Length: 396
Image (cartoon, rainbow, N blue to C red):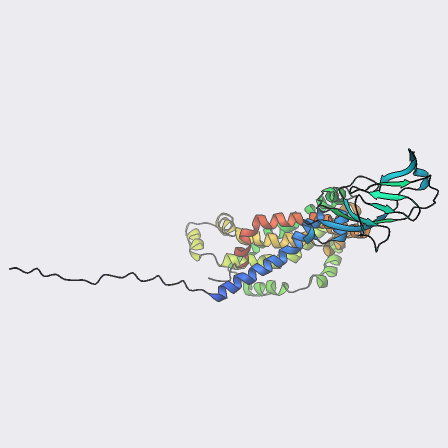
């Protein structure tokens, strides 16, 4: 009899997959970043909501209640005795407590502030001057007398109104139609665009030279650029203005004009521009530069055809910084442009609106959002290059 030998092999058992490691430090960093984003976003969202709210609701409640039902305590006087009209055997005074049609609805009313919630709409309220008054929800009232009334002054009717959320673009229409706002908007564009482009053009050439060209005192110039980053604007503003006035007087250039503010913003923005661009260009692969030299390319051709396109993230990053700073600037514009009404920038115009509409918060919020809409568009258009430009040259 033959025997068949059998072998048994252990069956491979599947092992449970290990749980991914959780980095609590990374989670905490993401949570902290989310908290900061929410905190910084709240003011902008609140400003936008306030700018489109009805002025009566904005004056009484915060922007976070914009979607809720609004209530308001107020008082009005009904018509006087000479408004009474005879209807059958009685006299009636009719009208509307709001004075005009509105979206508000009266919920309760009363003869005094203490009794404001005593009577609901449709009920009859005895009046101290005689007769009874019935108030409807839309503000219509009918004050009925058994005989012709002779009182001289009507008492107040206190009431609580409720109204649904109301949003309007009237605030923006009034702001944009205010004297000089549209012109100031154009003035800010006229100041901001050249003051952003000019330092970028100058700094790009200087950054390439400091990064890839060999010449004496290159290290000293880089250290000087870094030192200029900490010079306060207020300390150098007056000497710069005097120097510009002297040069402008010799060449017959207008002392209070756009040229002065363009040069001032260029001077104040160049150190940061050169620093950012030089760090970025210095981090580009050396093989690219060596291959360009081997092909016989000059420094100018290497810069324009290879370095400049590769440096676009750093250029966009500085453009965001410079444009936002110039758009929100008030001090430099006032010093170099003066208080001329035809050349007043938007920030200076908003200061004037603050004095003119100091109690009209709905107009001030609309004007403030008009001033930040352009920086928001610029930032969100270039934000993907922002972090890449800020980290330029930080790591190899």
